[in-house]
Image 1 (cartoon, chains in turn orange, yellow):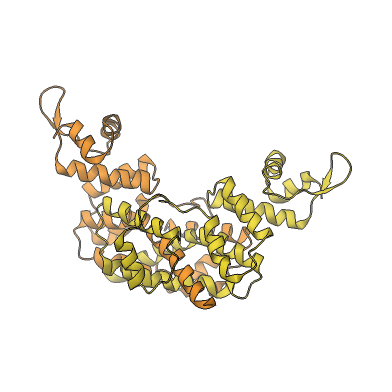
Image 2 (cartoon, rainbow over the protein chains, first blue to last red):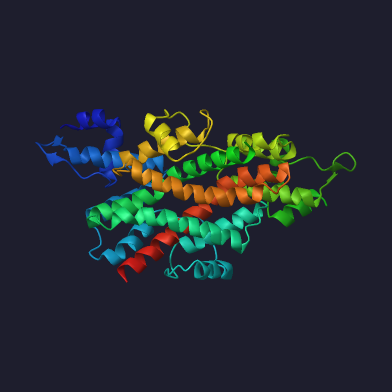
Length: 200
Length: 200
């Protein structure tokens, strides 16, 4: 298909598609003469993936580029896959100091993680921010949340083990970011339901 | 204390504090003559709460104002409290259509929620975005995530029932938004740990 049809099928304007081509997010179409190129269904899929990350997850263009390159060129070893996928997605609180409390929490939760995992400063920073807003969050409460997070991660990883490396990178990088919003919505619904039951 | 000391203790510059005063986020100090006012420890706490919401949760000023007003003036009935607190915080995908699938999911999860809950379009929009990025997310997987969300909500609400209405509004509104980041960090750590164990 021509770029105009790609624009029509994805709802993304031609100038934006050209921007994605220039930025290396979208692979070039097959050249058909000097000024034309033909695009395939794989381009439609790729544009939808880019839109979901840019619009749905507010991911910066540089991170989106890193995700699509890793999908095109997944790590050979399954062992590296998760670290690579985590390295691609933005982690807030990057500069936060990993506290002894966070190390204790990780140990008490029974988690075995790399000391350079970007989720460690993310957790330390998020806890500090929540406390500065007046929330208490003692270690017992944090451990209960950690147990709930284990439940989420078990669902996350169940399907990934059966997938090809390229699909697995996509599932982890894209799924981690986009399902954070699905899980946040479910948390609000579960709160409301549980509160209604409590007072009903 | 004077406004300069409030600035020093919170690390927030005086012009920003004056902006918070004008915007109604921070209550006026006690007047001491025509151009001076005295601020108390409650102002320090309030400034920290505002900073956590503005910086830590990237919440718009209008939402922060709604949260601080609700804390000053909490709903009389505990039954309304959660709905009020949820109404204060931003929900992405506000215009999304609530699909039959989401209604089915809510029913299958055993959740009893208002048909106007803002988390319903949030969930529908987040699921649609994740699927447009190529994730499958069948109903069985969504139900497993819903069960994990019940675990999170149980921890969320356990402490709230013992609190005063003002503290409960703060816990729900602030805790829901800021702990989303804590939970997202824990989910990444639990994934890494579970993956390391799987391949080890």
